[in-house]
Amino acid sequence: MRILAINDISCVGKCSLTVALPVLSACGATVDILPTALLSTHTGGFTGYTFLNLDDEMEKICRHWETLGLTYDVIYSGYLGSKAQIEFVKSVKRRFLKPNGKFVVDPVLGDNFKFYAGFDSDFAAGMLSLCGEADYILPNETESFLLTGERDFSKSLHMLQKICPHPVITGADCEDGYFLYYFDEKEERMPLTKVEGNYHGAGDVFASAFAGCIGGGLPLKEALALTSEFCYRSILRTKEEVPDRKYGMNYEKELWILTDKFGKTEL
Ligand code: PXL
Image 1 (cartoon, protein in one colour):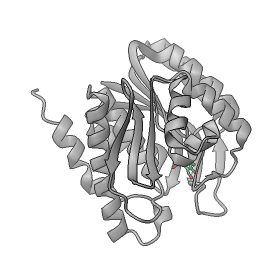
Image 2 (cartoon, rainbow, N blue to C red):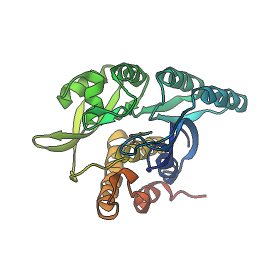
Image 3 (cartoon, rainbow, N blue to C red):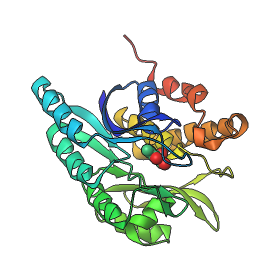
Image 4 (tube, rainbow, N blue to C red):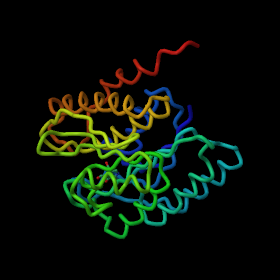
């Protein structure tokens, strides 16, 4: 199984590609990367970070890949560094996704009901159009609101389902509990155990594991259950081990959950 991960390289802070590579590899995937930007750290909580947009380089990389005839079972896109990249990622899907391949979009926009640095409603509108090309989208509760303008999870899910067959709202905080809201044949909710606090990079850990599970052939519900277990255990570990949450999640010692599932095939 060959997966293309389109995301930034944040050198410090454990998110985006530095998470996607190990997590997808633990799912047994061969992972190729298309970096969208190079940052000294991610933008969530650090100041003075460097940011190099890779717009021009991305097209050059893809032109070379076309000479190699590469195609992918799954393309997973996350943090995009500019509005132009949104259109570009649509073309990457057309050029490199196998006919029955899956396109997983994590519409990275914000958290805690705020946009991440550099994003605005115009960018969200572009991201919504990218969601319209995806088989699965993984907005967090903030992103589901920024994409649809709707705070009610069920309503937001139905709006998203009109453009994408399988939206998943990750971490919906409701009066009666904490849930994944998702659309399989119909609207579904999967209960989650909430751990208080903010865990930077949790969305990337979730999206990477989910893309790996889908690439590994798991049905949606099973993919979400395994991904949730991996994330929950990683969050508990982070709560114990990482005092400064901007340094990301300690997921490494929980990768066995994925290798146990995907790593036991015959040679
Ligand atoms: O984890 C999402 C993310 C990815 N990439 C960059 C970010 C963030 C969130 O802050 O800043 C560069």
